[in-house]
Amino acid sequence: MNLNATIPCSMRKTLLYLAVILSLTILLLFIIVYLSTQTSPKVQYNLPAPSNVDSITENHPMFIESLRNREYPFSQLNIEETLTDGSNFHRYIASYQSDNLKIYGLLTIPTATQPETGFPTILFLHGYIDPSVYKTTEGYEASQNAFARSNFITFKPDFRGHGKSEGEASGAHFSENYVVDTLHALKALQQHEQVDSQRIGVWGHSNGGEIGLRAMVISNQIKAGVFWAGVVGSFQDMLETYIQQIPFLKRQQQQVFEQYSSPSAHPKFWNQLDPYTYLQDISGPVQLHHGTGDEQVPVELSQHLEQELQKLEKSVELFEYQGADHNLSGSAFNTAVLRSVQFFKQELSR
Picture 1 (tube, one colour):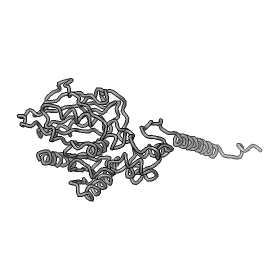
Picture 2 (cartoon, rainbow, N blue to C red; picture 1 turned 90 degrees about the vertical axis):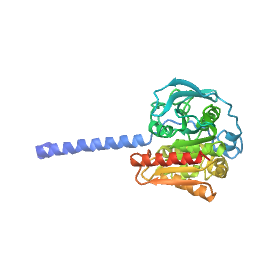
Picture 3 (tube, rainbow, N blue to C red; picture 1 turned 90 degrees about the horizontal axis):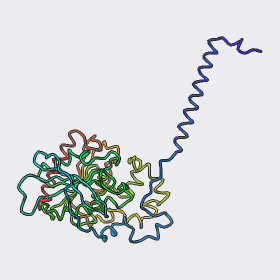
């Protein structure tokens, strides 16, 4: 029997159309399933394998005590390039040494008459920007200029692997490298003839907040800290409690746990990495700023840090900005700048 002869032409076309749609749907589903099984390239973190976690109790380079005990030799802050002046401050590309690497950064110096003891100074820590597109003079210019206009010296180091800085970018969460770059920058600033070495604060955004928090429990030479949308939770916060709200860490969670286990499973190891273990030693007051609409770093991280510092009777204040995003865009930015400048004026004048 010839079925084609019994099926009207219009129906045959409809059936053919449905068959094509079904085939394309199956193909699309196959592609989605295939892609979902693929993993991003492995990142080699500077942490031990799970079988070795329990055996390591000292001297791991990321441990807070290890970073306290290592040396940060003096490095001259050298002017590499003179840039166009700001409204009331000079701008330069400067460099210093960190682990025998040449690290560049953006330096601003007020044109005002220098105080007898030198200018109060802010070490400015940038957040994550893809190293392949990072530029020294872009990304944080508006923020840094706001502090520069208020007669602070500011210096924003380009962490290793960023801009023209030597070395490889390693990330802020599972390597000590950016903290080391920060502490070497602190040492270089302390020796600068125009810096008041007793009045240095740290400002950090996003990952820069995590780096700044670690620096403040490692060194007692940082007088105050301001963190915007900071990754300032404990390791358990970041890798377990709020992991669903931190996209850039969620993608790495399984790999980290497979290689190094979890903070709750091996607290003895992770606590030695965690600044929360050492909050009693924080070097000065902290001010936190966070948008409730932040889709990259949950506001709960700043809330938790505030709570823990309050328990220890440390000076801390948290400002939340309703609906504001990760960069505190819009009116939140201006308000956060004014509050931050006033905070540093107050805390760095004591």
